[in-house]
Image (cartoon, rainbow, N blue to C red; front, side, top):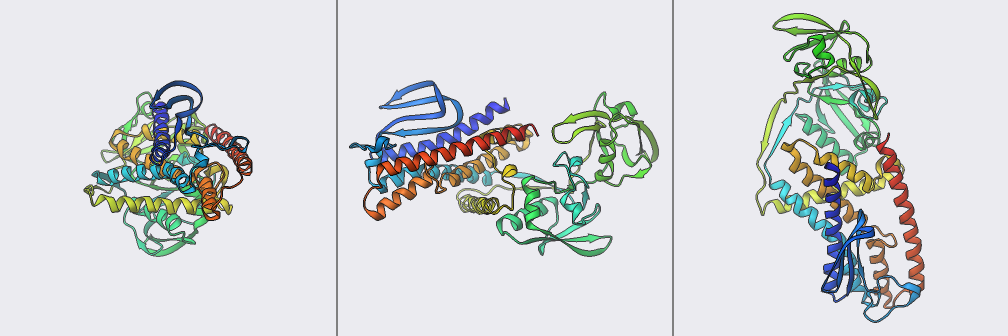
Amino acid sequence: MSWIGAIILLSVLVFVHEMGHLLAGLAVGIKAEAFSIGFGPILFKKEIKGIDFRFSAIPFGGYCKFKGEIAEDGKVEEGDFLNMSPLKRIIVYFAGPFFNYLFAFVLLAVLVSLPSKIDLYSPTVSVFKDGKYMHSKSGITLAYEYGIQSGDTITAINGRKVESDNDILKTINDEAIQKAAENITFTLNRNGETLDIIIPSVEMLKALSGERALGLYFGNDLIIKNVIADSAASEAGLMAGDKIISINGMNANNIADFRPIVMDNASQKINITVLRNGEEITREAIPRPVTSKTVGTYGSLGVEFDSTPMRVERVAGIPFPKSIPEAFKETGNYIISYLNGLKLLFTGKLSVRENLGGPVRIIQISSQVISVDIEYRLRTILSFTATISLILFLMNLLPLPVVDGGMIVFSFIELIMRRPIDRKVLTKIQAVGAAFLITLAIFITINDITQLFR
């Protein structure tokens, strides 16, 4: 069901985009022939006021077709889209992306107006050596490589005071992406001493984008909240309320001490010592083997830990109309982040394979978003939908032939030259642009599918 919801979400964004084109075209007097959600074979259609409204088989996109939009054989007739003034065409081309921006703006205005609850965890961290123990990208984690240790308390990032996990993650994102800082400096308290650890932003961006694991974990208590029925933990006699203090004779001060031993010992006996009602009790457990695409086969004990937050912060929503400037701020922040991200992709500082995604990946992530806990679902869906809508806004304004941005550039050239570009030349440019976009779409789709099975 979550995948169906994800496809519906993407279809809504396409509908918004194409509706922008349609309404703008009708407003400036251009005849629309067809309006479709999806590509390929038509599943359903109905003509309304001379426009053929369609639902097509492939839900990864859509289109609004105007009369004479493509200059076939260089011929243009009276009333054709390409025979309209450059200014009218610019309005129509721009309207699609602009509607995506407006849609995102409205969603963000609603989002900031909603009250929220934030679980805030202590800035004291556990550090995993290998990302696989966080069910993330395997390999040495960024935090471990640069010397952050379990038990360190992060007090500031680039000189900005932080007091919780939420502060830390927001500040890292702001410094690395929004401000494009060269380095991220972590100020730490380690056993009463203050020290700075400097991580290059390029490496931090790899962690933020998922190319490698950051390695930081917040919430350190090893108090068992729940023992899953018929699990290795239940067979070993572990109980809710037990506090794990050692594993295989080694102290377990935090999750980073405990989890790797469990995961590395699938089907092998391990000894777990817990504190129960003031008494130390040792139990023998055999972690059950579990296989995942991310880390392969690993051991699972079958316990949930009590991740009680340091405090719960309840934030009142920003009422209308005060939510409007806040929504502008949020859209502006995202646009800056996205453009900085494109710059890093084009300069090779971020992996194209890891960070470029298309409809398949959008639907995959959308299905995960729709499946989050109901308490956070509405906020998560609003935020994610606004983000994808802003991506469509920006991607469609790139100056590439065939997409809206490229056609706006051609129309501006005609406006300045005061004469149309040769239609045969334009047709050839559009054909080259279409071939490029089809090739790019194939690459992205193959990459998306490959990522699904990695």
